[in-house]
View 1 (cartoon, rainbow, N blue to C red):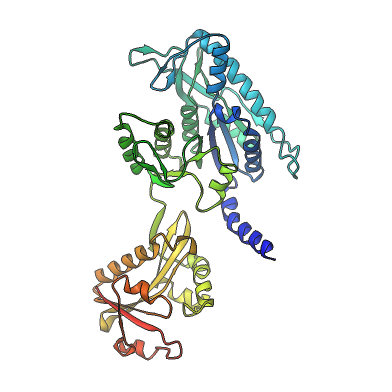
View 2: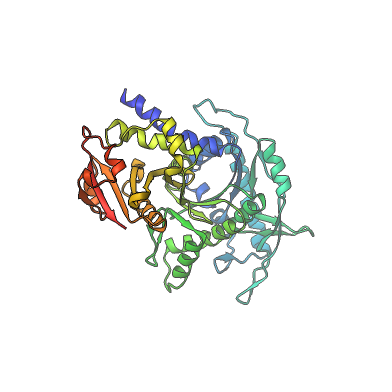
Length: 446
């Protein structure tokens, strides 16, 4: 029975994420290392699973290790400028061979469906083509990069047509000029510009070292969530480091393109450690995720509750009502008093609520129905909400906050409340005091 309960709880928790993802466009970028390490079949299965859920997928692959192997086999050497390969004519030939081989292998694996599952032999179609128009980068640091290019234009209309037909679009790190030349591109450039052109809902980079709160060589961390502004500050700190480490280099590679994509209209960019089995599913279908997410604006906001929030508020407070911590409120009462409620919303999910009831004659407000989602109770969310409501009450001219509680006395004491007696409550509130419940009364001057 416990296993059944855990499954139901899990399924209910992931269903909203699946529902909101259906019909959305995700651009997923991964380097050639992901293909070369022998674990790519599991990742392909996750791609197929996402496609089966109605997500429009654009996959952008790299081929750096495959190109390196080809050059070594043919005893050719290339140099790098700012981490970008200098591609001369002989190197370009090897680039085309390596990229072509990788693309065919990916297409073959995508045709497998999900082995040993209802998705086995599923007819997931893959479309690839000349979607990317490129131009030469030119000269960097006095070096001509020759056939190394950058994206000039993405044929978003053609890609959208393929997605509308239910195809998974596969884009290789090659671009074509109007005159028929071929240019070697970086996977991060191709992926970011594709996501921008499509105004994709998500751009996802599968990286080697990016994990939430991972320590980088510069002494900074890559948090689970950061805004564009925070990301720019982080890059400035990292670039000031004279001896970057490998984690720093991996973040330096992807973060600038992630920030550019967010600034140009991509709603969210994720950096996920590709070495974690099921990393894509864990990041996309769990609220906490396991990677780092970049957004243009903060995900968390405090706002007044509306009638559409009643269901979410009930989910928050009902377990506390059942435990006797909160006084029971029905949906009808909530509808009548919803303008008294304030909520904290994180990534479109309400994670905390509280209500303020004014007593004008006494210049006091009752703080009531304080509830925080269990997953966020150690993150200071309750404190943030109480501080906000205290400030709102002060702005409206109230001089005192009071709260009635049976189980959370110390929590309020830690936030500056002092215990008092029921006869110190506003007169109208005294008449409503439940002596059977025997709630303790705490007050704070604001």
